[in-house]
Image 1 (cartoon, rainbow, N blue to C red):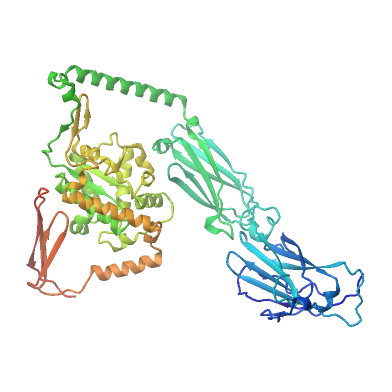
Image 2 (cartoon, one colour):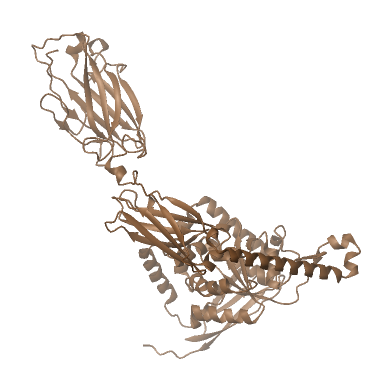
Length: 625
């Protein structure tokens, strides 16, 4: 045993008040009088012959620390006992976080007594630095050298270590990991109950609660969230959640699998915690006779279809069947009757709003279709109100051959999920629009009629391919055909006309409506450019949809701004005349009489003509309150 006695003190540098890379315990394992300073002192370097022998870096060890709160790094090194020991003044340990470039510097100062005797000359002393807090997933570089340091700096010893996540058993028991759900054993179980009721189906979800999560969200998903519930454990160790469905609700989906998800809210991860999932097939719980009835009805429908095909084949015009060339040649269709269509959409973004308006112009000018759109009928909508305006148009459509075109987008899916219990959605464009959010009342009014309707001929579901996807279609509409625009626009137009494109021995076609030719006309070119502009914007801004969502505080500001916009100062002697082109709108302002009312007239003309809209104003006596 050597009679070596020294004093030590610790100096730290390069630190700020943060959660990572700091010493949890400032007391070093020295014999006497440790102290802490804010900066490492810059020791003057000496010639190599006057410098002590460099240290040996032995080990870097990761463990859970004395208090088991955070992952802790232990640095251990050895000092040579040779003739250069009398030149040894201390050691310096530099720890650098290579992920954040944060650093920690610790200096140890050694002082020898004059009567110190060295035994076991070639024995090495072992020193260690404990309780250095580190962060999950970061990589640290540790460098140790003795002081004073030689001029060439070749006696430094360095080693790096990568800190794993909470899945590592060494640190799995620290408080941060426990509060992150690393050891949560959910033991989720599901049970499907019918209770003898052929119309109802009950799903019971059971799981074990964690000590570190008070609230949970249990959801059932099937090509979109069908239902979700928020529950609290309330000092219980096991939580039960029951969902009840009518069987017709589950039949709306093409998929027979239900995904059950339990989302915890741990203290560390909050809304981004790992959520266990389980899948069940609910078809096995349907009564056997239901499948027999379905099979019988299916066979009956197939038989009727075959009979109709045979009858039409037997009564076919001989002129159509005599020539294979004529049978294969598409028949160009001449549209004679003007049809009407109500367009339902969501104001996701100004560029998407531009696409919807350009589609309306294309339908009116190129296709000769009368379009009903909230953005084009804001005056009547403001007088009647949203529900009355929608209900009136719905009644008119039911009495006629008009159609309802539902344009699906990310905003449509998000608002539908909000109606099913998910987080409320407020779009920036809705707050700025004079008509506000028209999609939510539209879905509330149309979906119950849609799912109970014996025929889906009135409804056309579509989305713009490239800026939207089939995932944006709400689950109730998965039962019908979803059209891609503009690739399948011709099929959509035939649906509006109530005509079949494909018939036995005959294929109908409308010129200028295919994906390759629709942009050859002015209104089609404007629609094509609008779609490409929004597609380019999405590529440049991948989080564009999240940027369009408003928080409650932003919503209040937008509403205040819109009130100012909606009620501007009244200027006397004002008149507006409009001249509308199929692609652009030009406005001209002229001063006339004082207070006024407005009569509006609209004309829809063919593609090669301009479209005019005149606004006439008449004096109106207004009482000034």
